[in-house]
Length: 507
Picture 1 (cartoon, rainbow, N blue to C red):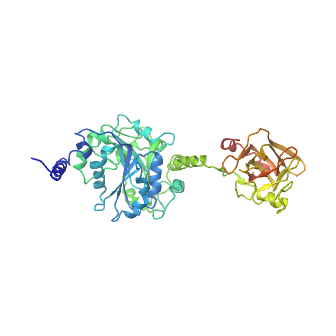
Picture 2 (picture 1 turned 60 degrees about the vertical axis):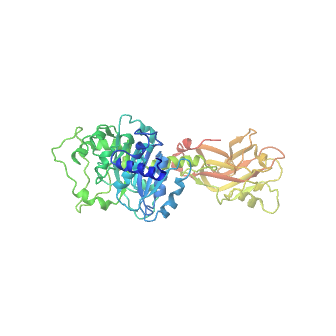
């Protein structure tokens, strides 16, 4: 007797439903064996178009080293959210699996749908909200850190609460952790990262009224669980929060901040009830290191004190460090130089002159001034006649400390004119000091990124700068010239000079 495809499919589906309480689909479809994982570390999250910073949240965790995100859209219509994030869903290895789950707002049901259908695809997973940011010390990678927990089935990340003052507005997450303060609240709550093959599927199925993002009270899982400091967590939630407070003394919290944690953005008013009812340990309770338990501060009107005693160390170890690290990568790929915040562009709008002009439609001052107007064009914007020792000069109006001079040569037949040149400076326009001589035959460009950079790490004091092409029958030609430095102050000359040694190097 031949069974039709429709009947066969129905039989498979019936079989899968009967086994629903026992194992995820990936195991059932692989003869009871765990298939190879597609991803190392994944995040499970729910999202809505109302999550204004969803793109930055996604970009941050992609930058951090998360391999994949399972995103459950809870909007009635998923169109707007999908349009916003769909760039993350393309390619051979998309960053997001996008799922529409409109009929249930239950986080546990969303979570179990992931466990049932996608658990087998990833080695590790963690359930996060769009206000949770994983922080790992930036001196190590997330994958190396997690994979170092070889005999561990679950890793607890303690949560540091930040007061989100702009919860209803779009926030630049790259500066958020500089502008907002951590709330003075103990780091006792956790988020749980689970090794998929150790996920207690049957336990979760039988306890779907519970939440499983903070803790899974399964004895087998707890036997091989720890926090990011590899401290045993078996007793952590047994009597909560007393046992948690015993572990989370001030020293431990400092070490957690330096290692890894979850930065959780929240409205300070939403935790008032928890703080007000937070149990205070007996005064005769002692910790092993005799440190005081970290209890949330209260004032007369029971409002949480925003300033966290760990704020100084959190300034050194927070998610913003990853934004800063990647901004540096961005500037490394910049065709044009990034200027130190310590320096000012001194040459802008300053009077200039040169020895002669090749074209009579401008005066020497007008032609020379073009080289300091900031408009790169890739061609020689000012050219002298062919003459002996042609020069260009700028008056900075007063003495400054000059650190950098950028020369942007033209990319045209005039390029070779600047093969050799000399840079001189003066404080009074009478006594001139040679600061640099280019004597090699190497050509340099400008708008293509191969500009010439002169650096004096200690800085020179000068008002006038002159650039000369030495020799007979020479031509001075250039696209742009930029001079950077700082205001001259008699009592602070060279005070900050050493900061530039590490930031710049001469071509």
